[in-house]
Figure 1 (cartoon, rainbow, N blue to C red):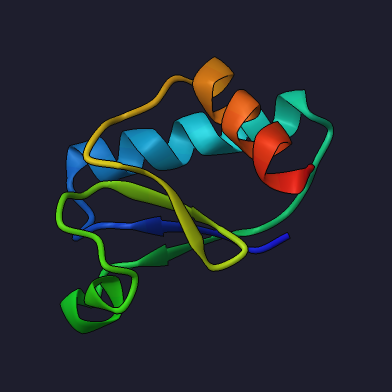
Figure 2: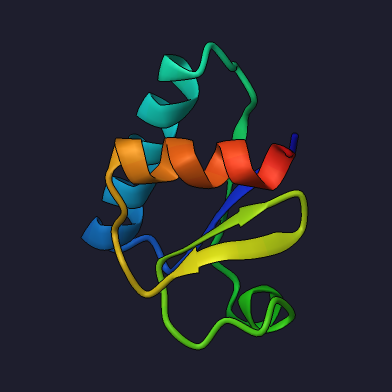
Length: 80
């Protein structure tokens, strides 16, 4: 699974990354997380608001810092 956090590296982006790491840990997954901060690359995903979470090339969350529990649910849905 490819997991990406899109954002400039602000505190909200770092918190989303930390929550995503926790969600992956709780799911027993060890997939690496890539942080995309280049504005042009972020634009390719059609993201207007950051931070955003992308799973396997598809934006699944944007504009908010989801909790680890919310991210677990999103990951589970994305994989089914």
